[in-house]
Length: 566
Image (cartoon, rainbow, N blue to C red):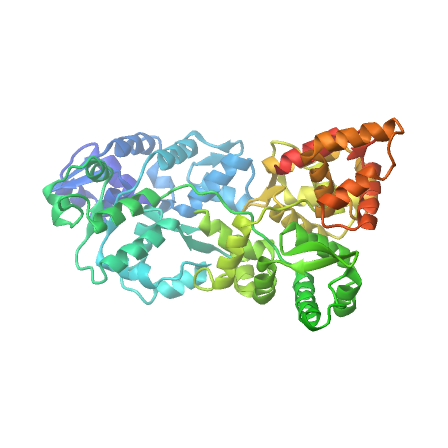
């Protein structure tokens, strides 16, 4: 969305007259450009020398009448302001400098969103812009960077004529989003509709006319009808043409709300382990005595906390376990092999990708991380695409550190908390350096427990709430004492018992009655899982100590945890 003061002045003047020339004589500055932008926004129709309200325009007029236009800034609403409005509405908290931007536009006060702010959001959500593509806009989109810092957008626009008005039009059509300013500056991202426009460019590589699609045009085409204008535009000829269908697809994508993928992370030590497994695999081909056991991997990597790395890799389906010669071994998966080649990535570096792919705008810090780590350049890189696919397709398993457990205990349900406040609560609960905890919060987001928005507000996800419930039903203090309590291994044991309840119920009943050998459950698990007897025994003790396994089998905490991941 994009509205300048001049747009609102034109809207106000339209209450007196529909004659464009009359309005232009009163408001000559930029009239033609602003009138066209109002048409693109879907607020007016331009017919011959007339400018007429649409229903959306009539709604905007009611809002304009409540404003003192002399007191508002030159730009009233753009994609940056819309993002701040959305964040304030969603979380109730935005940085003071962001709130000032809203206050000077009468969109918010000290209590939160004002009535005008709420109306702006309603109009934004309940209206749809016109798809308006002229040769200049097409040329601008074709070569523009798709994700970047705002400075990069400014550098690019200097190479194109009439670029300011094109940027305004792109925001009006919800093709371009600009982030609120943070310490790193501003960022921008194009939306999924731009991908549809790039397909359209391939259909009409040398566009010399303007292509327009309104809501009524869309409805007419989809009902199997046409008009002289639609046929002349090349959208219909004995049915919807390929160009017409691509215009429809683009129109439908404009402003579409898309689900974001969880932004995966892969640590540098995890890449080291994957490379070590590759070395061992090569040796194994000629010498079957060399297998990827814990000790063999440790010897090659010298990683102090290798157990944590192996659990983390397994949780993300980058390695799989196997028993060879009665030893626990670790092999990389196809995803692990590719991750080894692409290298590490942080949660923030991935949010530079996942936010644009979800039709949202990342902040500058995420974009800079993405550039540093190679997930974005002028758009999403091959590395970014691979990790995006990984983020969307893997079935994550739980691996909870002490910070994850503390975060889940201290984060309230159904309520946002500022990251700074959460860091302090975790520090008071389990200790740790601020930098270490901030990193852990990012990793908790990758695990699907929380979401952290552009304004640093954090909230539990649905999965996070369920895992919190499971932890609170278990023994929290014992969980914090044990280094590796909830891991893919302990989860797989619980899941095997859950999936084979009848058999395990019989085993536990017999064990209680003294009818069976006490290791019957161990033997059964060894048949079901790629784990050695010793590994199963060790993890059974952990599950009993932490409250996930009792004498009669799974506890309520275990069932809640499993069903959270089901």
